[in-house]
Structures are given as C-alpha cells and as structure tokens.
Length: 280
View 1: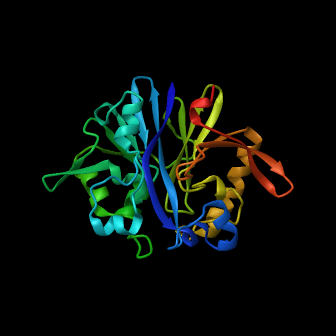
View 2 (view 1 turned 120 degrees about the vertical axis):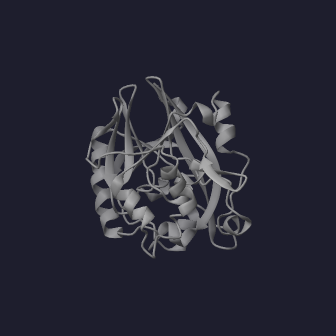
C-alpha cells in the first residue's frame, strides 16, 4: 500500500463561517483573513494505491464552474488535481475508484467535467462511491445546504451508471485496509475513511475536523447542520484518537497535512505535525 497527498488547489471561505461561535480576535490568529474576512483553505485529497486499485478520496471543486461561482470562492494557487496526480506518476485515467466523503461542492466538484457543454465523469475508468442516505440528502437538499449541493456535480455521476452505494454501517470495510465511520453533524452520513497503513491508523477527517485549528471542541463550523451533534462526535472521536494514537489527515488545512494528539491542560491538542509522506 502507498498513500499520496493530492492537492486540488486552494479556495476561500468566510472566516466567521468556518469557526462558528469563536471570535475573530481568536481565529484570525490561526488563519488570518483578507480584507473581506475570507480565509484561504486547501482542498487536500488522498490517493490510495492498494491491491491493484487506485482510490482517490474526494477531488476538490473542479474548474468547470463559471466566473460568478469563482467570484464567491476564489480558486487560487498553482496546484491542481491533474498536476498533483502527475507529480506521483498518475493521471485521471488511472483512477479505479472515486470515494466521496460527502457531496458538498469543494469535495466532489472535480468528479464531473464539461465537454462541449456536456457533463461527463472526469474519471472515465472509475467507480464512484457514496451512500444512499447521503445521496438522498444531497439530491433533495434542505434550504440551508442547497447552495453546497450543486446538481451539476452530483446527478451526472448517477446518469453515467458509475455510481455505487456503500452500506451505512459503522466500521464497514471498503477494502481490506480501509474501514469507514459515519458522522452526521456536518451533513447526513458523511464518511470518514480509517486507513490501516504500516501498523498505524490514519483517519481522513473531511469536515469533522477540517483543519488543525478545529481540534478544540467549540471550534465548529457554521456550515454544520447539527452543531451539537458535531460537538458530541468530536469529543468521542478525539478521545478515541488519543487512546489509539490515530494520525489525523486534514483536508482543508492550508499548510498542515497530518498530526497526532496529546492531552494537555487545555484538553486534547496536537502533538506533532508532519507530512503524509513522512509516515513510515
């Protein structure tokens, strides 16, 4: 098995929305905002090479949207999904499985590309994986989340015939080395892969802990549909992660890829930070 951090670029979101009830006087020290209160965030995916499969976990927002859309979210930086795959000797055609933690645009927008005004799978040889609970939630969205569930990112996956659903069952195996946990505070039935790698457990945090700065319990995004459920999920997860010495992989931290944890007088906090490639 080999793991690769894949950077699909950076984008901007409102700092207050990303940190919820935490005051700007605190969060601005963690991720300084621009003059419009916008903070820059990574779209860091993971590529898993294992048992003849090449599994891409999430794929960023893509580049097919129009000028108005990018005027809200400011896709930026030199890194792209294609460039990051190529750096490791791969292309989109090599991907066998696209695993979608959830269907918010910054996690699944790269799933679909536009060719001559037709929307088609960007990974033509891949199977796309979601779960039935979340798919229904995303395709029949509530008014609060519908701006994050864009039909052009989602419906063409099913129309292509490449969509498969994973059973919503805690600890279910996706592969021999990847099992899944399900959380519901951010959105319905978000999937977090737990990867057994070189005797360690690496957890792909998606939007339960979008960045290192979100480890403290009250640091919960305003985007979360059930913030008190997120709070309970974070407390339970962090306690387990500390006890079992999990490695956390961050999708949105603009600099930090991974960390482990320690108990401090302020609660559970980071211990060491490091890059995925340094794990051995």
